[in-house]
Image 1: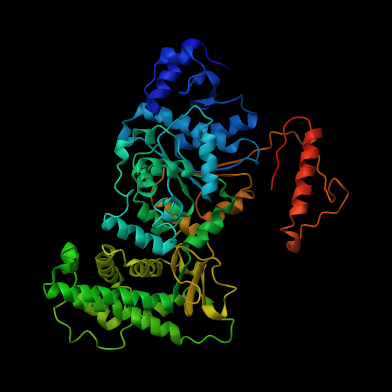
Image 2: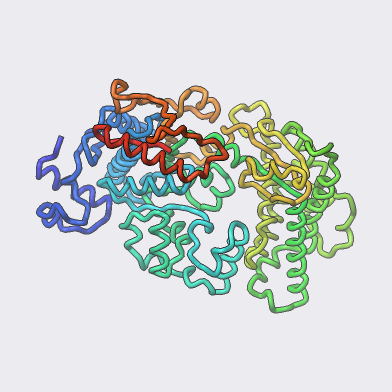
Length: 577
């Protein structure tokens, strides 16, 4: 199915319009060794409504797979596609989806063209996908999103991790003390013509004095395909922080056999007494800043606008329920080391009762306040006023954000929004988010260290040794997907080597997948020999139990055995570890 020279020239010209890479077509045709992209090395394969350029003759299973990907993208239909490991799934997925995008780019204006969101569980899997992309005929504008933990190249900051690194980064940027924070993506057009994985992006940032973290987010706004981990889309908090539009996007979950657990963990949340104390400390900082501004002190002139939007009464309104809930959580009885387990609905009563004001601490404060705010002061956070509470709390957090703080208040606010939005859901709506899909576990972290860190989602105000802790575990992976559907993506494609049984997975995720496909392997079963190897080349028994997991001698003997088998096996060998 190779093209004629005339067809190839026309195809190159059209493809390069998609790639936006200036090139001399005559030079390309006459120089097959050109470092620029050349379709001379690719086959043009008709797959459904699109022509796909593939690096080698595809297997029948790959052809069928690519046809279904293009069909799902074209019709906006969700698809669940299973293709065994070793069948070239990722390469087929990238080639077919980008071929479809290329055709769409020719039909509509750039600002209306769909984009592709490509997700995998780990950054290493995403880097592998980009490595596969480099083998294709396609060079779209790409972006790969990751946290500061992964992308920060500032040695004066990146020895920190997590929350502390986020605070340090924002502080250095605000004080103009990060040499990478103010590099401009627009000054580096090669970012849009090179396919950079995380390591490439880090090296480019060091060489060009450009922050990879902020550059990747800026690129994502105009990228044809954006790579990111699962939880960046399934975790509503991270999804909001990405500040991306997912409407009309083709959302692809590669290696999707882990997607249920990631979705459940992303919906789970925790609150500990220790972290609530940090929230209170942050509110005291806001109060101190407000009082300084009211006295006319100039040290906070840069945030005077944000400070003027809140009153001292607002600050107490936010702080009061946190103090009350901390006391309430501390007084819950936990028998022994086992903790207390209860149904998800119980968390409603805990927040309704636990956030109620126990004192009249607001009555002697200055400034009039709205009826809604006064209602919070009297009743705590309830079904009527939680929106108002969250609004005021975000205003307080924004004051501290300019000072590289306020992250604990921000997380507390997000938990409040999540719990009370669940509370407002109709419990009979099986398609909606329901707190009945949660289990609540209350324990003292010091007494449950073996439990610490397990099934912890991103909605977390808890860490080890933080005293009494409330852990709400989600047992319904469909909650994350139901929220994702509300973003109006064009279609959602799940693909992996193992998705079966698909019917039960579809029910778990609570969305319909009209297109389902279970591919056979490209290797005929008659050519497969299954043996259990118990001894190495010297005849000694293998023992890979836990105690021997670091036995270097055994690892070497296993390597020698694989080498020996490879030498006597005709053709290629695929090895799994």
